Structure formats: C-alpha cells, structure tokens
Length: 239
Ligand code: 2AL
Image (cartoon, rainbow, N blue to C red; front, side, top):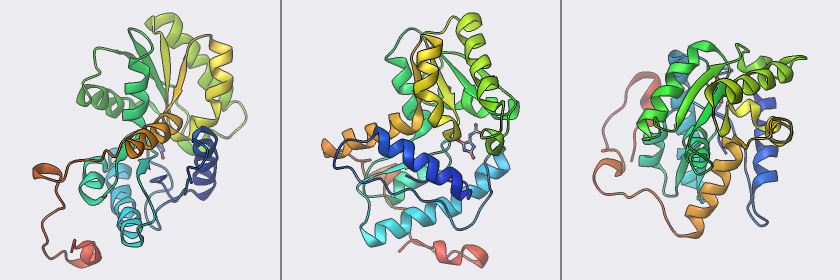
C-alpha cells in the first residue's frame, strides 16, 4: 500500500483502512516515499511524487516483499510506470473506486478535495472508459492535509449529499485516500453506496493475486529498456 505523498500520519491511516478491508491472511504494508510532496494537489505535485513512489516499488521488488501494490492517491500517479516495474498487479485507488462504483448503478459522482484536482479525476474517468458512468466530479475545497481538521468531515458529507441530490448518482466515490475512514459512516448517512478506493483497490489486488493475474510483460508493459539515467535520477536506471 503506497501512499505517494510523504505524510506519515496519512500513510498510517490509509494502512489501517486497508487492513480493515483486507481478507484474513493478507498482510498490508503501508509505505510512503522518502522524498516528494507532503500532499498531492496539483499536476506538479503528482509528477514529483512519482520518482519516490517508483523507488518504493523497486525496493519491494528487490526484496520480493510484495505480491501486489496499491497506489493510494486519487490521481493514480505513476500507475503505468509502476506496472512496468512490478512483477505483481498494481491498482490505483481512482481506477478501483470508479470501476467498483460502475457495478452499483447507472452513474456515480466523485467528491474530491480541491477544485483544481477535478480535471484529473475527469480525465481518469475518461481514460478508464468510465466517463459514461461519471455524472459529476465535485470538490469540497478542503486540502488533503486539512481533511482531519474539525468541520472537514461535515463539509465532505454535505458535498456528497449535493452529489446525490443534484447529479442523480446511484453511488458516491470518495476522491482522496485521506477520506477512506469516512466510508462506512457516510454509507449509513447518505443511503447510497459510498466507495472508498483504498478498500476497493485492496480487494482488487487480492483478487488479481488469487487468480494469478498481473500486468502482461510483453510489449508496452515490459520492463523499461535499460539505459543510463543521470543527475539526481542516476539511481533510477533499470537493470
Ligand atoms: C490526493 C490523495 O488521494 N492523496 C493526496 O495527497 N492527494 N487526492 C486528491 N484529490 O487531492
């Protein structure tokens, strides 16, 4: 379980939610990169979160310590690159949450953090072929690291209520890993299914592992070709 931002408290909370969702016998190891942004709320943050995230996967691959990986940020940063590196399946929380929500009705709404992250969520819905199901992407205008502050929960819940009422959605997707702990309570309060990507991706990785499935390694998703990397990225050379 890789939280691609470097905020340790958030990594611990995500790990707890993943462990609560996982099957008996699944071991969740929650990690965050040793370098990168404290939260991911822009394209810039997202791009600079990826090297640290890939380093975590490279380390785990070297140790042989993971059967599969979840990328626990709603922008699914570095997902395709991670699939080239990893020998097990890699699932992003946006992808898992949106695919899961598509099982639950004709349409879903995403409720995310800052307005400026809405475009990325819309792009991902289209990228995954789910634009037809995505009836709205809404922001509560609360930063990722402010989700723990007093009042944040109620503001996110209020936006979820508006999503159900105004978008005509059958399900709500929580658009940030930092919202994972809200899922159960919100499901009860909203009366529609609420999908947390951390839980959905955890179970999706388990399913893929148990079926013996992982990203194919021919063609596009083969390991990247070996070549020199220079400067700060010199250790990222793939062998
Ligand atoms: C996120 C997320 O899940 N983690 C993070 O740092 N930023 N997503 C978001 N929409 O702000």
